[in-house]
Length: 511
Image 1 (cartoon, rainbow, N blue to C red):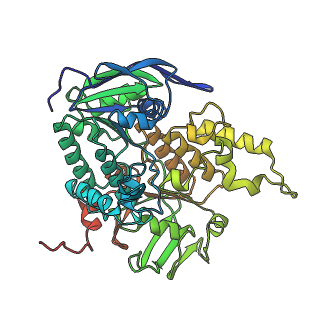
Image 2 (cartoon, rainbow, N blue to C red; image 1 turned 90 degrees about the vertical axis):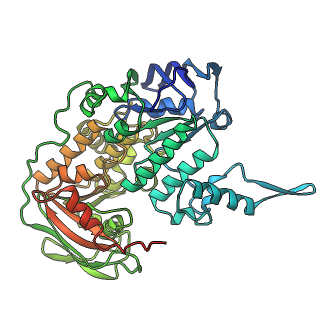
Image 3 (spheres, helix red, strand yellow; image 1 turned 30 degrees about the vertical axis):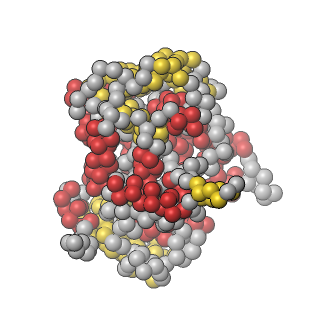
């Protein structure tokens, strides 16, 4: 990983303020061509804001931007793309009802002319898409409807789309948040090839191991300021953490103070009506327990917990809570039985982006604040919101700030506050720390342990092996829709989990 002397990008003294908060304060960033430059910091440190200025989504209040030594200014993303800068956003926004190739070439469809008329050349668009996906070794059909793709395949499609612009700078904001280990390895091969072609990659991630493996240089931000830039071989995980949070973090996981007790919820023989859905799933969740659910993408983990929450149909099986069989046909039923679900994709199925932090927090508990006329007691609601925003350390100018203006980690905390207000007995968390910095992760882990210590049952789906091992009391592993095993905390390790995660998989026939 050779480092050249010149800079393809310089961002000098960038300052940006929003109402009530200074997002960026005199920030510097210099990126060399043909390198991977990691950008790190806690949620709310200003990383995404800085990149949105580079990509023309925001305008800086002051400072200057140079490409190859020449001053530039972008008023919109189109200008940035034309200048050779593309961006893979943390929150994916594909058009679900259109196919892969239409999403990839949106706004630049190839045209075929017939006299004065022009039409979209679908044959060329298909051929160009197929060639690019094959070149990147991505097994995605260009004509597949994007709404039918998994989150990991949509992430891969966005990587291919960024590459299709032939950009000299590619911004990758949490590009591996939805990818499996093998897909991450594949992405790194693509990044290495782009690096060898002189492309600069600005790589935003909270995953320390990834950063130390793929990055040439690392810039760290804290509270909207540039802390410093170092060669990656000068850094360790502990050094990165201390520079990110401004203090030493000796343990990544809080001390376990919860003690699992008697059975709170029993799941018996849950089966999906879909041919490739989950089959005959049974397990028990105890009071005071954190039950981790592991498995590879496609193992039907999310589908299972969504069925428990009433979001999906069940063909067979039953759910028993406090020794009573319950019928859950909708989220309303689930809430009535004190079950809460924090969904995997906070942007698509969690937040209401144009609504405030306050309204996003109380929306699942409105009946609690309504009087006999249906009018909301906003004084009581505001009191609960303020308490939970303070308790979860949500960084927001005010509770009236639109939630879309918060960082991803702080949006996640608001969603947690939403469900905590419903006072659930069973809290289901689907990838609760995806795209969240190490400090915020610790706070969420501590909250999970505190809830378990108070006798609640917590179910956590996670694709991060250290997280499963570090926070769970037991780990249920799924493979292709079936439970392949349940491991106690003391016996679980990465090798055993991976063996169970692949237990029922059919061997791939050699060509």
